[in-house]
Length: 93
Image (cartoon, rainbow, N blue to C red; front, side, top):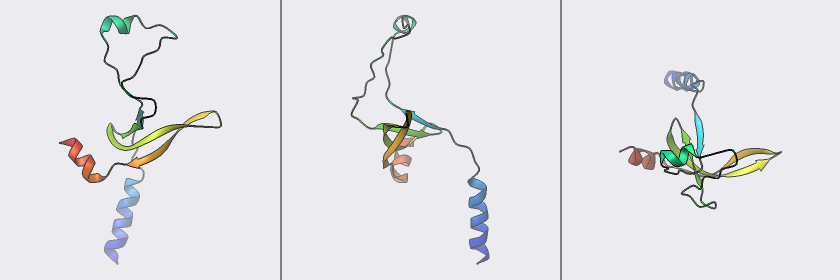
């Protein structure tokens, strides 16, 4: 019983660790001259189709796939798939 209580205390310590969640809609490789020609209103086409799920990253590592949703005029993320721990480990190597 004491071990279970200790595990709960350890888990509580982890709950306060800040993590950076980011969403990657797509990527694009560009030449420097093209980058320097960007202006307000320029459109940069991404290498992903609009209908494809995008990657959700935690501290730069993919953990899920999702889609953009709009709620009360704010952007949000709907999680479609959680990447399994085994798959995340495979992608690291």
